[in-house]
Amino acid sequence: NAGVMQNPRHLVRRRGQEARLRCSPMKGHSHVYWYRQLPEEGLKFMVYLQKENIIDESGMPKERFSAEFPKEGPSILRIQQVVRGDSAAYFCASSPPPEVGGYTFGSGTRLTVV
Amino acid sequence: EDQVTQSPEALRLQEGESSSLNCSYTVSGLRGLFWYRQDPGKGPEFLFTLYSAGEEKEKERLKATLTKKESFLHITAPKPEDSATYLCAVQAGNTPLVFGKGTRLSVIA
Image 1: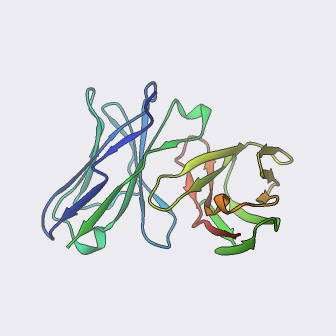
Image 2 (image 1 turned 180 degrees about the vertical axis):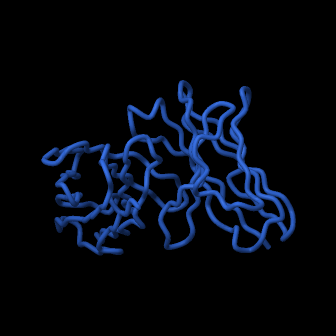
């Protein structure tokens, strides 16, 4: 039973390019969460999705960032026109319905903008 | 706004030297308090969930406790392999988990 799968593990982009981060939740989990972690900072919530629905995007920057979780396939976090400040570790987590509580995290994607 | 404060930021222990990590929280309607362990370059690994004041959970050398305002992670006779960053998070209702900045634990042989 594979855990939460994120790819790529490492991603290097030049300023102005687009970054696409992918996340496949654990089998049986229908809820996906994206978090960003900067050095010496805690995990900051970005967006919460269910299949074909964005439930809470209160932590997502208003510009350049978007997320989706289509009916088929992985969840995608997309960052357009990346800037140096976007360099961070991006973690995806999944859970069964929220009543159960507790998330399972992936290993993260480390984005470096040069 | 839900807030989580962890202390100390960093802790250095000798092998076998027991200690506690603190997590203070402010949340409206606590649904659960979570402890995770994070190793360098990896994602957080779930340790415990606590739901109500007075609850305790144990796993090997770790014991988590919960009051109405804070949680403690007690580490008994730690070993070098316990070195990691320990993260605390709270959940209110169905809102996403809110994390503290973590405590970096180093256990020296």
